[in-house]
Length: 270
Ligand SMILES: [Zn+2]
Image (cartoon, rainbow, N blue to C red; front, side, top):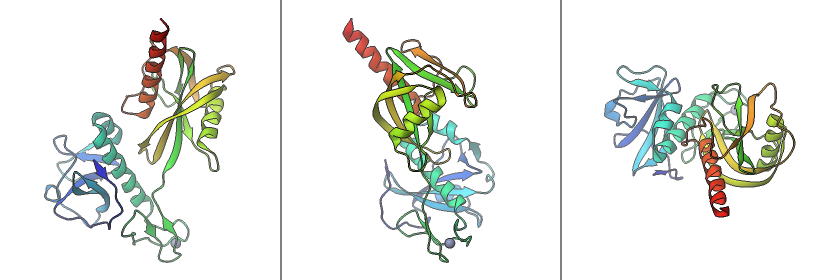
């Protein structure tokens, strides 16, 4: 279990665990990705950030400009899909904090180098203009829409052929989550929805989204995929789903849960 806490952030030390990154990839040795200080050689170019406490020990993420000899590089997506829930949490958080640290080496307002971190929270304080910079978290909605016993699934142009998923998109500035869900569904496939229901959320570190998941029901309109975004969209029977995202992701979870609900209703009716 990862404890985020608000105690003073320690500096790297011998009785701690380390996640190592290079060029955004997770470094592994014999499929392990949690290390002690004696497993690697800290360098002057290495950047480290305190992540929290994991199983009672301080956990740090360290980023190297190049992969140290002997380590293997594994993509974050592959790591997340191959791991269980507790490792999903620490890898997501470590990756997001390392991204924040790398992207905020200079103040975005005045351009001064930012060398001072807050001692109790993940914030960098510009000593020149006093602006505080926190890790960026970008909310994204994701929604599974049903119409009777069918689920709406779509394939964007960036997805492989034969793979279908939910409608998803970034929340705009000044928009509520509910408005974002309705807008994204209408923009991407041209239909109106009703009966929005919040289901849960998941940090998604590519690079700093927070996926906010909903269920919804079709209300009106004709499926009309947005020509520049959606390659295909359709209604799929709950018991005959195509290739969908891995259930480690909230996207896969929403689809499977929605299908399960429909299956339960159907068995009650018979
Ligand atoms: Zn500044």
